[in-house]
Image 1 (cartoon, one colour):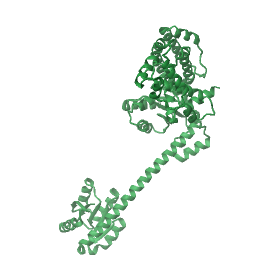
Image 2: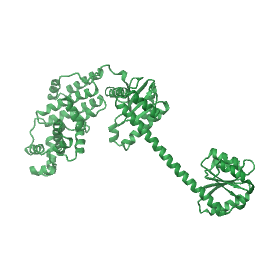
Image 3: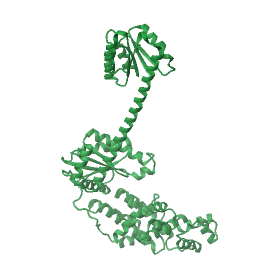
Image 4: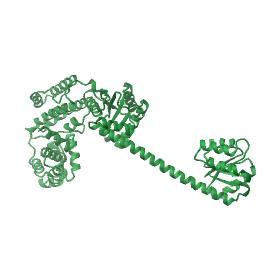
Length: 529
């Protein structure tokens, strides 16, 4: 404990300095002063725990010093030194907050040290209690913030009544929704890629870092509520949305974090239709599929009619160009179609994605007569067509990948089309089709045809253009797509029937090919029927 000695008598100060070091390093004397004013100067510069001060001194006496200390450093304990005739001063000092006193002429070293130890113990207890109170306050604040965000998320996801909104405003003293308010949904661009490349070490840290920047700018503009959703999305609710507000958030995230944000913004609402506003902001955000990355898209700017229907095109023309290996003609068809969709974007992004899927299926159809499969085509940029189409954030991403894949596809078709594989390779593929439900190994397949594992692997790749493992996965996933159309089968049952003991492993493998998890795929195909 750090002690400051204050007394105008030098002999008293010397005596105290002689006694206190006997306390086995429990106390440290940080200085001495001969007046209250001198003591305040020291306290302004040096941390202190206990002030041991005389009551009567020239200039500023001990009582005035005590008052100043309690006003400026309430955590410091004051120990008064007095004379026999100072008792009424001592009473005043105790009323003002002094914790202890001792008569100088009767001072016994052991008594002084005992009293100092008592004060020391009291200080430790108070600090421990304050730390616990602070910890609890932080926990309560955190809990309150979490509850508020949960309530806001609930109201965003489902239609809320005026009563529910009033309760939320009352419970958490939120911004006023009587004035026009706007909902904005922000999304971190290329979210999956950021996680894959581990730039921010973890998904939690990535979202936490962006959330901090957004929260600070919300504070700067005032009157905004901020809620974190999942997968790199955030919701901002603000009355009278300043156009510069979102621009500043986007600029700060790009400048300090080297990340891109896109925003979807609702129209202004004067009644508690928070769910409707949220849906408008989401719909606007989805429109970046056409606009591209790093956009601020307002719901009022969208075309008046967005439909799940798409303008059909003649697949026979595409098939003819594919069969003729007319790469330039295929690329021209794709470019013309994308340009037409971009100029007149009346289809919802999801509807247009499905049209891209139909286009990929057209390429797949051209392989079926030759007993080939689109999933056996050499990967372009390490991705399968359906995965790219369903996972791409913009139509431009799909277009750029697809025009690169066309050449890969045509090269594969030219090399492997209309060929008969060696009997051993056909036998291996037959085994795979017959024993999908078993944990097949390459070594077992090699033994079946009398080859070494290494020789079979090389020969299989040369004949078919894919590895045995990729072929096995492709055939299993083809069977999985068929089984997922049966609503009575559980996902784990589908997994078992195609040879996966771990349903999670099956789900990850399925998403790598299809761009969606088995549950999502089932919901999509059953919804069409």
